[in-house]
Amino acid sequence: MKNYLSVLHEYADGDFSEPGVMKKPSFDLQRKAIDVLLQKRDAKQVQEFITSADQKFSAADFNFETNHVSGVVFFSAESLRNRNRDIDLELFNSLHEKFAEIFVVVESISIDNQQEYMSVSKRFIALNYCAQRDASNEWRELVTAIASKGITQ
Amino acid sequence: MNSTFKTSGFEIIPADDLSALNNFQKLIRDTSHKLIGEKANGVVIDDLNSLHKAFKSPEDANSFRLKLTSQLSNQVDTGTKVFEIFRTKLEPLVGPDVLVQKTPNLVFQPPEYPIPTELHRDAPANSPYEVIVWLPFVDCFNTKSMYVLDREHSQIAAEHIKQNPNDKNGFDEILLEHAALMEVPYGSALIFWSGLFHGSIINKESESRLSMNIRYKNLFSPTGLKDQLRYFNVLQTSQLTELGLDFQHREQFN
Image (tube, chains in turn blue, brown):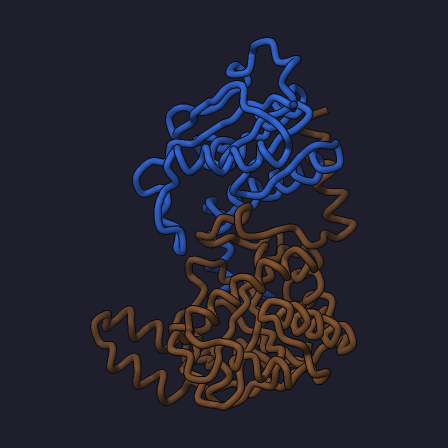
């Protein structure tokens, strides 16, 4: 039987204001979702972490003997985001160096080989790039200019 | 792309690969009939048009829809299939780096089904850089279909709501005057921009409507409020994008 770490996320009020998402998931619900994944993989949880907007997961959290741990299961990619809401690529990379397997339940991410890791890592790079661009003044000015003058001018 | 998409925000497009669509339609018919425990009679579109006869209540019909959605997701990569079937129209719109909605929405509207799709528009909330593919598996016409407010009138309606948030009557007048029920024959899809108001009314025809809607956008286009990781998968990337992302990954970690 494999051993996994699990990571829950404590959502702040208002965090789940996204249309179509009615409420923030409780810890019980998160644990149940992670349990389903653990059962499918014939695995058990050996340690649980909880992240929040103020309490981020970090490489220091798994600075212990991890030889007997195969992977880490996140309930949500929220636990991987930094204060700017970007995915923390350094953390993600350090997780990959430490653990053979990484899962994120809500976002249906499943990494157990190098190809999957590269694919997800590149997706995160593109996502962060877009988020940073969309939040920039330069982008806002460009969109405004195109909307008023047309793209060819 | 010689089309009405840019001006109207929507277009009815024929399948590039009708044979693939027919196979997909047959899979849906076969899966549906397994779920309702009936034998298919051979003519696929007739079987789908008559699906309502298997259900006694709207709840039964909805339960069937949810089971069908789940079974299909186990059998087929719908996002890739639909993109392939309509590739020559979709790829020029979203580009070569494509994100696809993870779980397509299957909609079942039997005659007199009391829960049509309420009037809404996807963007804002969803990205205004998304295209929705509305794919019926039967011929859709009159009330069996859905309605769309074109780009110009969606903009007028949005402005009206902004200026007069409590004037529902005024908004309904715009809708009644300008919303058009789409005639979408089987073998075609309605593609529309996420900024258009759309919805459906109670199906007053004698046949069932079974349709699917799924969204596509460019990997690098702005995201809207919907979490891209949660709702979209990468369907394909260009060779150039692969090189660029690989380069950025090496720069960051090697």
